[in-house]
Length: 174
Figure: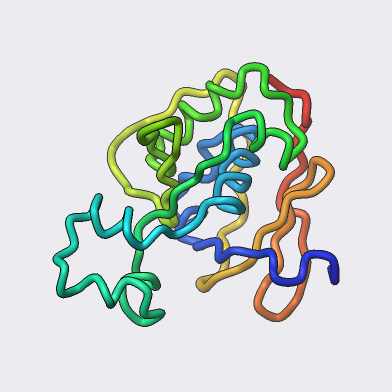
């Protein structure tokens, strides 16, 4: 765990509680985690896109202001780079992107960038699955946990330090 010190992001459990996570194929889940791990908050872009007034822009970088309540971060990485991060084949990764777009966790933006949403933007959109559905995960406790992807496994690390393997996936699955 020492090698991962300082390389984490907050994973809002509302993604699981809203059943959005259970609708995604393992590749889409891994891709979302890769997107979140490299996406960054760009205060200027955020203010421009969200049309935040000039007088309120100083609040964006204030931890208790807009940064804490931001809706999304920007990812500048290519799909090939993202696939390398979570050890999945880039072949057919567009279907994973489409799933994430359908459940409104990502949105394609200019120049191949992605807006990566921290919480799902819920709607009545349904997603179609090619395989039979897996059983729904057990309900998560309220709060936040840290998520890590490594060697075909998705780990959850709770606030008390407990580490659980949330899901295993086939890195080569289309």
